[in-house]
Amino acid sequence: MEMIFKQKLKVWIDGKEVSFNYIGREYDVDIVNAYIEIPNVKNPKTITVEYKILFELFSDQQNIIHIKSNNYRRSLLLDRDNPKEMLKLN
Image 1 (cartoon, helix red, strand yellow):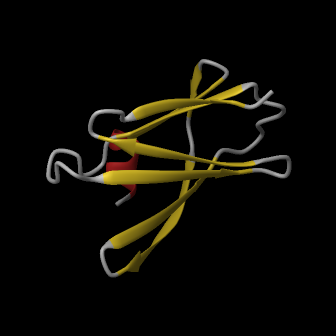
Image 2: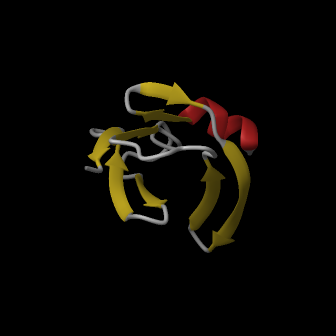
């Protein structure tokens, strides 16, 4: 599963692509909760996420991304027509 995440998930902090640590996943009927972390990020101005998993299999696939930090909690809804989104944090 980790290999799929590395292929289908891309994250940019302030316009620079960053690597992430895959922590694990949980299954709940037709939902998969996957967990990653990006260590050593200090005061980002923007976070951009592109996540294309399952779009090629399901035309109505939606991926919800929750971004949590000590300073903020934000969410993104990505789908086949909009697989990439930027959050402005300042």
